[in-house]
Length: 215
Image (cartoon, rainbow, N blue to C red; front, side, top):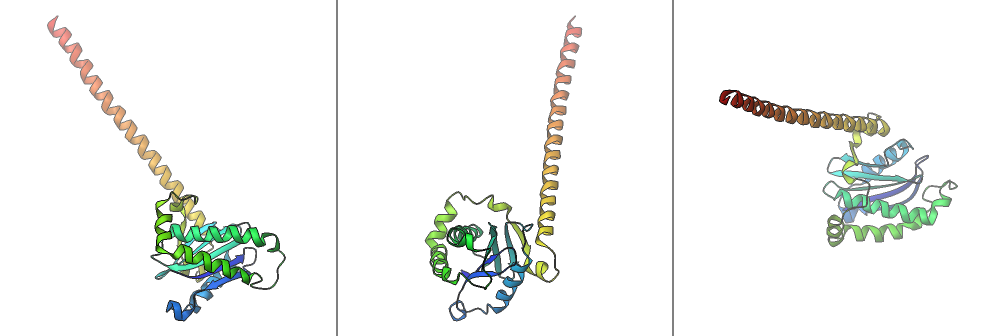
């Protein structure tokens, strides 16, 4: 289930459009999550990773940044990541097509609140179980869904750690992991060559021994 969706300007976190599941419908108090979403949007900048999932207890924040616009949603932790980011990309593409040129000029929050109609319609199609199965079975066009950075919302908001710093750490860890894999492949290859050389040496020694023995 997707409970909250916000589209904001990346430069200053100004909310441009939003769609919120009514509390009585969802059975959840979303005020705390709305506050976290606002804080997060103010922290994002051009150096932030363009895709990220932030764990918030039994909920997840997912966001997608492109063309100076950030699309963010709040969903159940069990909601498929591929579906969540597909939903955000869909919204981002349509929003930028309709309002992209006007985004830098607006000064009032929720200047494009009428986009809620499209958001509600799109959310319904992505939340539908059949749509989820179809999306999950298709090879995703998202850029390497498995490499989307995962962080904790409390670490980012309360400790004040920049997402760009987390992304740098994640990149460093990926580089180190790749180096370890490369070293492991090299060692395995060298070990294989050593084993082959040992077998060849034994075989050559045996041939020489047999020749001299029979001579």
